[in-house]
Image (tube, rainbow, N blue to C red; front, top):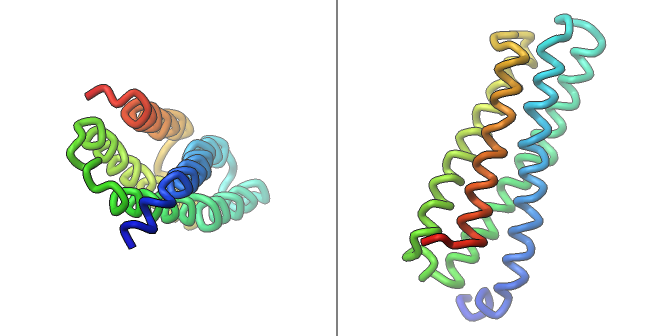
Length: 148
């Protein structure tokens, strides 16, 4: 198994990057939808349309892309376990754990919107929108520059 993964490492890496790009596209777009959704009237046609968009984005793009990112990332570790000894990888993994937490927070807010519970303002969602961006920057710099 190890030899097969190592022999196809570049394919694993490409699939990992594609999955991460899809995950990040959703992670950057979903809180933006929340910004606009927060300003709609409860029960309005627009609010109901946002619910559909948010649910579909999370279920059909963000969640599967996150799972694929995790799967291909784990397979890359199996192919080259020595990566776990690198300092940059520890930084990347820490940021990824925080990205999973951000994913969970976004999923929680989708459930709140679905129940018409408006507990946060549009300004809160604008700030929340920046968290995946900052984490993505850290992850990319850690993986590409490998600063330590």
